[in-house]
Length: 233
Image (tube, rainbow, N blue to C red; front, top):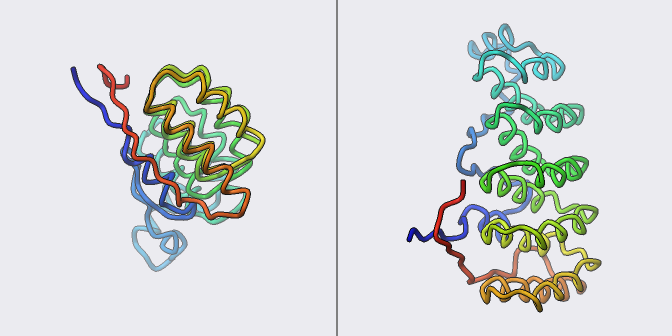
C-alpha cells in the first residue's frame, strides 16, 4: 500500500498564493526575466531573436516546431511578452500534442489570470487522461477564478473518481466562490461517503457563505489529507 497525500503544490496555490504570483509547480520551466526578452545588447537575446523571431506571431509559429526545446521556448516567450494578443496563442497551445507544451501553457494561463481561457480549460478537464494534467488545469482555474466555470466544475467534481483530483476541484470551487453552486456543493457533501471529502466540502460551503460578506480569498485552509492504494497515472 503506497500512501499518496493530496498534492501540496495545489494546496499552497489554492489557499495562499495570489493569482499573480510566479511560483513554479512540478514539471514547469522556471520563468525568466521578462525584461530581458527585448534587450538588444544581450548576446543571448540576439541569438534568441535570430532563432525564434521578435514578435508574438513569430513565437507562435514555433509552438509546433520539430525541436522540443523551441516549442517550450515559444510558450515561455508568449507568456512573458506582456502582450494581450499572446493569450490567444497560449490558449491554442493547451491543445498541443506535446504534453509538456500543453502543461506549460496551462500553467502560464493560470499565472496570468487569463479569464478567456477558462472555457477551454474546463473542457479539457474531461478529455485529458492523467490526474497530474487535471491538477495543473484545476490549479490554473483556481487562479483565474472565473464564475462562469463554476457550474461545469461542480459537474466534474460530481463524477470524478480520483479522490485527490476531486478534492482539488472542490477546493477550486471554494476559490471561485460563486454562490450559485453553493447549494450544489452542500448536496454533494450530504451524499459523500468519504469523511475527508465530506469535511472538505463542508468547509467550502462555509467559505462560500462567508465570502458573501466579502471575506478575502485564501483565509480558509483544510487540514484534510487524502490517500489511496495507488499513485495517479
